[in-house]
Image 1 (tube, rainbow over the protein chains, first blue to last red):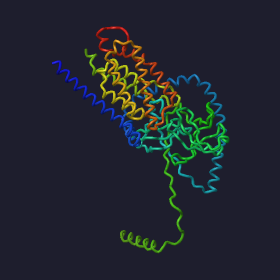
Image 2: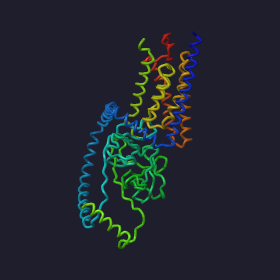
Image 3: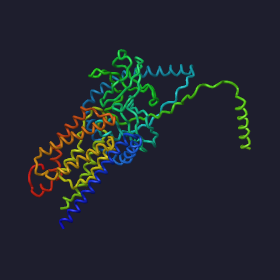
Length: 306
Length: 175
């Protein structure tokens, strides 16, 4: 009896060992596959998130709102001071509004004179942040809008104030936005005040670093940083933030978007800009061969219509 | 006797870990320098495996951590593999676990967790994946290790996850 038990447990142990080895190999292979064929595994990841997160949203929501209530209560004390400040600001803004209206009018008049054709306006879909990355080392958020709503991989996202990040991973009803503060985030940008170009690259701090500036001397803290549109991923001229000098002496960007209160985020849907391909062609009457073809074509269509 | 069945404890384990993953997903901390959460998921698993290896089957652990890898946007498979290796080691350790003082368990956990993080960052840098900043990682290591006794106490006292010998002998101490 005892030997039988021993045999069974020995066999069980062997099976177990084989199982564990198999699982380990599978896990390491998965990691390698992720490293080699990243897009495919990331598609799998976003599919899983797409399946899981909407189902748990009901449980996330109350907790999130409780947390927001607590933080709102904390700010309640500051409300009075804030109110006064806001009123002052409003007064100032009224002046600006007047100026803006006048400028707009003037602008419209000048445009009418000029017959300018504007680029098609950017459209956007707004979504809510339903979850964050869950890891202190990744800066990203999950939005409750996805492919159904017309979100595309690589789209820029903004809150009301400035650039927030880039869409990376789209499911049917969810999508992930990589924030500018993530270490994987690199955004080509331009500093209009000095005409310099730079790369805004996140490093897991609240203020991303400005890399690859040609002449640092010309950049001053307080200069605005906008997207340059280089690389074709982001539309140009979205505000990112202002330049600030970090405690380590490097130039950093103080982000315009309010990362403390990211609740609703707009995903820009950019109409793809037309590409100009090839050099210009000869201008003149149609060549004989082409002309014959077009005549035959028109005859054929006439015949078909009759 | 029903409360002691491994199946019920497994379910409890599954529930707790799911809750932990959910809590980490909450959109509370979109700021980059927000609070760093301790790796409660691994600490809980380690303490549980040491006490009740029978209620944490390998496949359950692998399933939970693989899911966590996917959901928490970590490189899929890598951390799960580390946890698998670590829990197998702890499973062997669990046999004489009840006779040893708690300090021993704590030190084991600290060394094991440190080794795992080191190995992970080694593999990540070998495969040219950008590593998280060392300072933040060290901080997470410190608070996770610091919180480990609390988790062990909670398991022992509140959730009554104890080594079978402790149940039988009704002995004191956080074994």
